[in-house]
Image 1 (cartoon, each protein chain N blue to C red):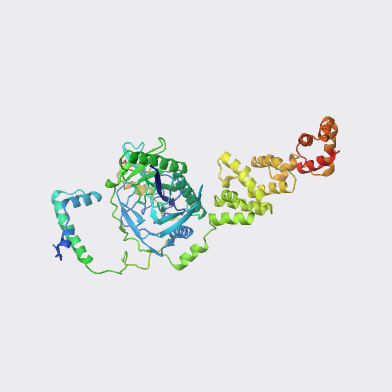
Image 2 (cartoon, chains in turn brown, yellow):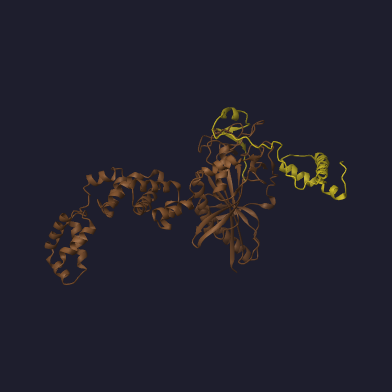
Length: 477
Length: 107
């Protein structure tokens, strides 16, 4: 039987605010335990939550970016459950009335563009962290993360393969960083993903029973976890079994998912509107302000790069993968004054290779946009050949100075002067009478021999185009 | 017992000991058998009252979640205020290396 995979994703994006969603405690990552948890985060009796306006602004910015309805009125609710890293005994979340509903995200897959529906996005607070190891039989609680603002983004079950799910996730990851609402750091848990996975016979319109996969903290693991789970469910159904609706943990070390708890015994969260918090009401003025401050989005930027700079869709896609890379490129084009395609080749070529090799982000590039522009100018005006320029780039990366200084100190300036090249070419021809005779007898292959000899004699500095032109002239009988 | 109009309302308003057990478990409350019975009666009365209110026609009325319809006051995103970890840790039953210690929990 042929099976169809159905996937929906829930993403928790940590919002990049300086302070927590309902308290004034700071949100910086990695501080000493409990040094960023105040009386509100520790849930001392009598404290009251006050909403961070920036969290609401960021949620609204996301909503507008995915073409969703940003509700002028949304309501915070209590999600009740007991766990020691949740000191209040409830998480403040949004339930019946989320701030964002009904959006869409356009993804580009191998088989073309596809729209993935976004059911909703709501604001909520994160819990603290439980440490189970080396606590002498106890569990240690660090409340630093408690109260950190999260935007939970829930997709429709619109994805049909693990690869599509990863593409959606990457597109969303790029978007939240463009919007400057989330740093996207998956290792630190700033961008977390749960996947709802089910399978059904191809052609069936009803959804199969789903399993919820948790604990997936990288794009690679999302793909693997879903692929494993799909295989497991198909094997189960094919052998006459049934999929249980349950939460499963992905274990990356073993590359498998295993049951965590089944929904039958799942918590009954008893949501109700939080009496401590009146409705979140967004005014027209607030929404207009958010709209005005909206940065150029990845799709629009990619289209503009194609039109304005004459780039291929592929190059434009690579260059707009992050806002910082796109900025670097545009800074370099501006500084170079022209040659947008040449700049693109350098950014997606040498620069990207160096960054990859060193595992560095564009922010840590050892050649600045202005520096790269200086080199590109020298390639464009013929001062150095493209080949020599790669050596210059390497020296720039090593911190030896700017392009002009390196070209001068290493004597790399290309020889473009006709008479100087003619002199070298004449010497090469005089030294190789046998090859000259062969060429004149019609063996055109010998031409490349002369090019090689001339480049060698000029120690690689002769302008290749000029060498070709002059050789043709002087070799002619 | 609150008077209920009609047997249907009366039936759905009745809670049994099992319901009470479940609610008590969710609230992490330990109840004796006598308490369970007492709560079953009390909570059934409350549900009876809710049933009466449910009988009021409310079509087209927006549910009110909070009497203050003006909405939330928003705070500026500034890290501010005191964090005194030592004072907070001091009132916890057990701590270690800046962490609160609780009986071991593994899901």
